[in-house]
Length: 310
Image 1: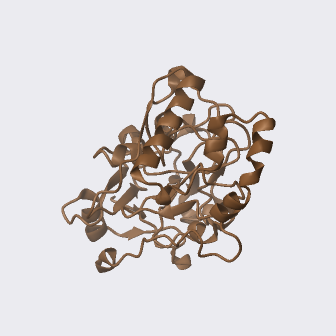
Image 2 (image 1 turned 135 degrees about the horizontal axis):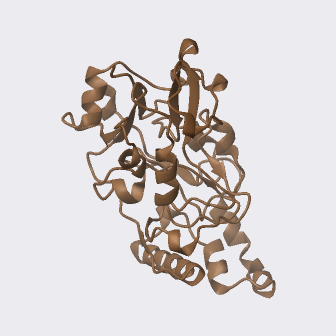
């Protein structure tokens, strides 16, 4: 556990990759504004297209961006929303744990995540996959069954492995993004700036856990089911053509609450907390239980841990 304090979570500079950075391209493409206007693009659509990288926005610019996003959402959904940009708290490195001896495969964590994070209902997107695995075969993601019937769980001779973003400390998805639209925050949450993502899906190819999901169509969330408490990196409405993923419910956890999946679990199989706090439950589990991470041989250093308590 000593290496938890030796983190290098600072993202690479936006123009560190070879080739023309996106922001320089946008400057060079300023002459296309007239074309965009003639093609029917609204002023707000043009502003969104020209928006600077999140990490380059001044506080005043960020307020303008958030106000625009809130206004767009209210006009589309008919619901007043608030979008937070609350930053990571100092001295916090979030981590999650899952007790495989308790998980019953009910998928309530999946449904809680869908509801909390405004995931598309039609077409359907789910950030959590629950896999059914024969006990005799051990943990083998390639051989597990994601299509089992949740009405028939738990089945004797099987156990269940929920898988979502592992929030790696060495995330391969971040390394391959050509426009730096994804990075690790100081509290360990791997985020995506939906306004900066170009939908190339390189991150999806690089993720060994299948944790990233692409919006092939415009996400659909009925207004009556929309969660109005949002975060810029979290559960705000995503546009078509971008990649999205679990954010440890950033709109909740940065306010001191548990992720929705943790609260939804009926058997207490999910744990969450600050890995840097020696008194936290997740830290106690790591020091007292036999814990493991998925695909440890890849050295992605996940902050999502699995363990057995029975």
